[in-house]
Image 1: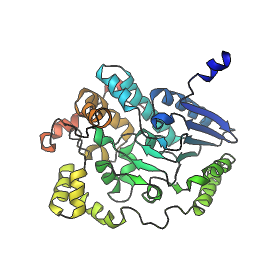
Image 2: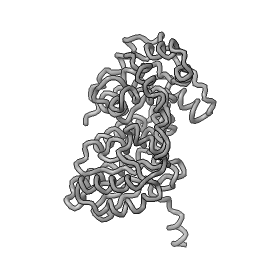
Image 3: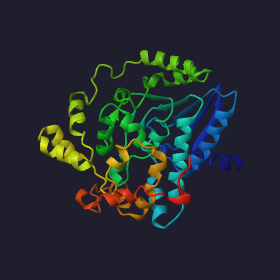
Image 4: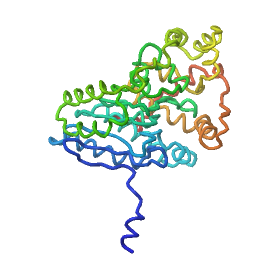
Length: 352
């Protein structure tokens, strides 16, 4: 009976272990593509800070189980359900997620994210701010938040504008998916390693004692990895058009450029570009701001509004892919509406 009871206990959603010189975080919700929830955030953050302070821990590695996803995003359905009834879970999730993102970005120890599989939204937040991000041929990266009436959060307003030219803005507005080696070519990942080499890579990483050691090991494994090297960057023939067509300083201007261009590429992007009217994406993506603090100001607006819940309904619940936005067009949103999204939350401001 005791054995049966022990075997029926649910597995931890995140595993935290010391292996060699490394603290190892293993995301462990494979049945839901390792979606990130508040309990996981509350497990990872204090342990990360503990390892950062320990003299016998020289690096932190984050990986995932299941083979399909590193982390496909935050547990948005739970957040929206909480937001509808005024449950503080909704605000707590984003507040504490952003604090964890900041801790990853400022960690004094090398932080190595092994993004072997789907990496979107909250999964990007768990990885992109770290010193090293290792993609494989299984990696699928996207920031699809605009499709659910949100905006590219988890620091998207910081790292996306720092990709080459207007590539980050293009990824934000369209939710375009990058796969495999292209995640490295775009600058999201720092390294590319064949998936079958990852176990050996991990065994060498846990022996590293410095950031230089980590870099040398990753460089060595990247040189040994050939998957996808014979194919050009998926956006290579379009990158000049992206820089040109997405160069306007407003979403309205970008849409005008796309519609006026008339090329097959431009027409396709105009049709597929997902615009979050309530926030006018350019305000969160184009501005070089301290985004984790400032973006948190958006959440009362998001939670009180319509589009976030409607987007989740259309994409994740009913899956009809036909959200009915309100307002229905960009010209119905005033500059004052946008400015209000940046209002201070007073005592509820996010302090990092």
